[in-house]
Each structure stands twice: as C-alpha cells, then as structure tokens.
Image (tube, rainbow, N blue to C red; front, side, top):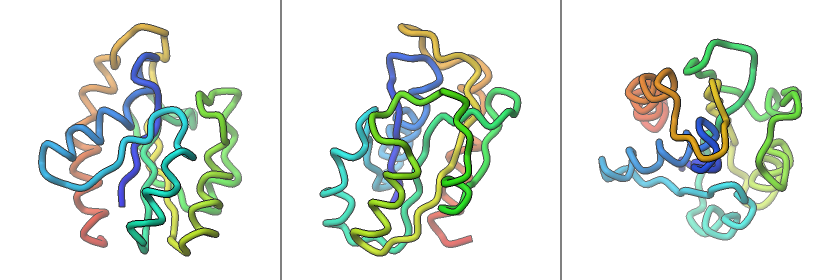
Length: 143
C-alpha cells in the first residue's frame, strides 16, 4: 500500500500527494493522507496491507529531487532537522501502522528543494517524479 503525505500548499512538501495523483492516474491504488496522516489509519488498517510505503518530502541532506528508501528502523533514527509539517512525527505514525495491522512500514523520502508557502513543486523535484513513480512500481512488485 502506498500512502502519500504532505501539504500541497508548501512547495515540495506536497510531493507525496502529487505522486499519489500520478499513481492513481495509472490505476495504482494509493491513499493521499495529506498533512495529517494519522487521520487515515482506519483506511490503512481496513485494507490489511503486508507492507506500507509512506511517500513524503524528507530532508536527509541530499540534493533536491534525490530520493531514498528508509526502513522502519531508519525512520526512527532520522533527524528531520526541524522540518515537518505533520502533527504526528513519521516515526510514531509508522509505529502506529505496524502495531495496528502488523505491516512492515517503509518511507520513500524525497529531498525537497523548497517548501515555500503557496509555491508548487520546484523544477528539480518535478523532474524527479518519473523516476520516483518507476521506483514505486518496482517496490509494489516486491523488487
């Protein structure tokens, strides 16, 4: 299961939500959880996934548009450097999913370039979208 997280009104912070839209256009099931992903825990649990991929902007010190897959243990150790638009930290959300439905939880973090209020995706992050979507397709196949 793919869960897109972020705020579309804050530039690259909305990348997880934009990716959900692209996946849905390809008829790939994905949930847009926005900036308050814990509100979607019921939707996630109801589907009884074995694996959950959270897709979100994540500052891990790379160039804008780079992306990296983090295991649940790595999510716990991530230093978000003060950057988070979510009410519940991602590590707690991941643990809640795991505890509630037993799913393995992963984070596909995409390095933002700009999280300016009112801006759309930066050109750098927008250019990375096809690679990110391709990665997710492969992840869904279990590769």
